[in-house]
Amino acid sequence: MDVVLPPQTTAPQRTVQPPAHLKGVAFPRDGSPQEPSKKEEGLSADELAKRQARLQKRGALLRKVLGAGTYVVDEVGDYRRKKVKVYVQYEGFQPGAIDRKKELRVAISLPDSWVDAPAKRLKEAFLKTYNSRFRKSQIGDCLLAVKDDSYLTFSKNVIGDDRLIGDVFRENDEVFVVTEQDVADLDAEVAKLKKILSDYEAEVEKNSTVDMEELTKLTTISREIDPEQAHCLLIGMRQCYMLPVGPEYTVADVKRFINHKGGRDAYPLGSLDVALVENFEINVLGDGDTMEALCKRVYGEEASLPRTIPLYWGKRLQDPKYFLWIPTLHTPDSFRGPGDENSAEAKKSGAELANDMVNSGGDCS
Image 1 (cartoon, rainbow, N blue to C red):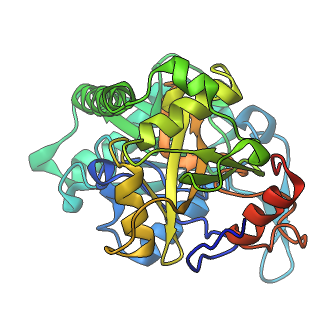
Image 2 (image 1 turned 180 degrees about the horizontal axis):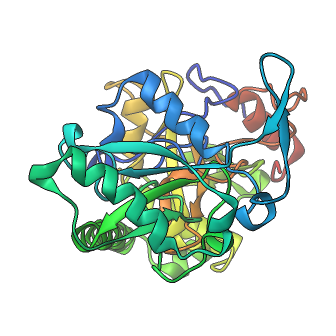
């Protein structure tokens, strides 16, 4: 049995497009947990690049730097004491949340004596500058915050006024001023994203057409698959399987099969994405897409099953703070076939991988 597939990119690009109903939602993008969110797209390219560079410049904890006697050579060759700075800014709970004209970012050099000073002193130094500049929109009660470990770019850890500067901030740190309203807006944004993802996960069960008993009987052993039966080629996590499908099978059914075969703990339903590679992009599919519809999408409107439908799948990264499965961030092996990237195996097309499976009489993994 020769498997004939449409032309495909053999090594899918890492550009992942989420399902249609998640586009425009402020999730971080693949490539870096700290990449700009959708709300930041109004900023200039230069400003975006600056924001990225700033996040990489965090130095040692201030308690190790202030008073340590670090010196640098200036432009005339003289030794001088290195200035220890942090960058304090107000921009609402995230860029674009307030009028850009009211945003302010200032560099504050810290004296050694501030190592045991409360964070309130740094906050007051910023507020003195801000409130004198914006007399009609002064900031009242507020706290300082720093970026946390969350992949969500707007998420922050709020710092209490009584925390010591030397223990909570780092050299070149990006420090944010947040009001009570900013914190409320941040929490509301997180709650909104949780609701969106919860509804998305519910779509899997809603769009399933095959009961679990039938799913458990499906085989991925090619010698046991009827060559006249339609099947999809599942490519992902450095593995490749042939899975028999019917025209009414949905993407949700494929996810449930992966969940069953890979293990519910290893591949929770909410962590899975199934996609087509089109125009050098990985386009994540909706759970209700049927195999018949995908066949036409891949081969053209006149096509019908039985055909081999190449489907790429992957696993999302889980946010370390909110435990959400982020739909725009995936594990490195997601949407990738067998072998290392530079190996001969990795350079094979989907059709070649399928034929290898047929000739070997078993799984290709």
